[in-house]
Image 1 (cartoon, rainbow, N blue to C red):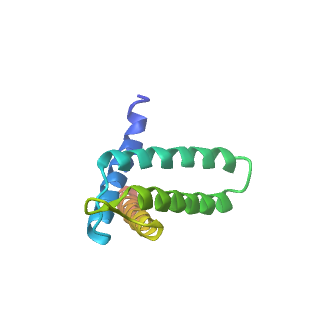
Image 2 (cartoon, rainbow, N blue to C red):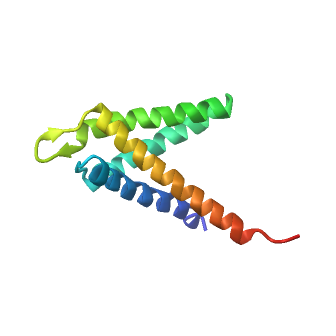
Length: 126
């Protein structure tokens, strides 16, 4: 039963990897290896867990915003360094920031649609 509880995390990981690939290809015309995208997902998961541990001791709203900012900055650095255009030309910090922000936006919109659809489907008249 504990393995099934990891299924939503895996689903969002797969979606985020796919959205990172879409953002790289469509928006910035970049190429990022799937392995690097999964490494970034692992880094984001570690940031999220650290943010959750810290947020238990402090206020949640400020740390949620801090977590998003750290996520964007790490994504900008990571993909600015490892995303490539063509064979040798790598992206820059701004390109990595655009890619990470676009992928995060796609993931948030997808989550919003899924939550809204489940809310509408599970809403029962009184």
